[in-house]
Image (tube, rainbow, N blue to C red; front, side, top):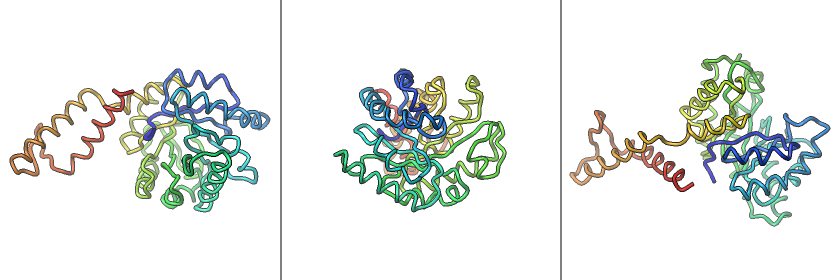
Length: 296
């Protein structure tokens, strides 16, 4: 299932919203029992998780669950979510290595109780504290379950990342480039190869602004995005899908390089630029992603 290119936040107490989410074809739904659920509805949200995950699984859509920051009853939240089809737990306010290890152990225990394969459920740490952002590499390396660091890119409406870091979010986003890039590098350097960016802080109907943020996330190195509105899923899917021009370019590059190798060359001029072995991995990744979409 990885990389997951698009994920849609769904408040878990809104049971009927899961079907609506499936209809827009996200790679995953983020069933939220944290910020988007009023305190009086959290028990209801937890009670609905397993049926919601089953519905997502039947539709071949991944299921993330954003739990609350670690507390004395986190085990109950994990138990409520643990079922076949649960893809990953999003951990908000992820701050220390011990946080990740504690979540890892809880997942192992509840996987065993549910009869699920060990380490079938991943972790996406969401480091919304200054300490967590600073130590993101350690968070990503703390468990083999970590699939990627969950970062964020914001429009001019600031959220938890901006408050913890101290920047003021702007439309051009230059103040966020260091943090966004750092989290990608920290994630990949620790072997968590699928960093995801939450896309926030723009008006829901400003699709152009949303697309700019999604493209920025892709270009920085995030392998997917989590969005707040169903209309944003189509944008994310399109941004991360290789274009026909890209497919043609990279097919031509590989063919040119294959011909060069037959002549004993390790570099070749292609469309005006010199290319060598260092350019081949990206070409193969883009073509593999194109094939993945064609198979879907």
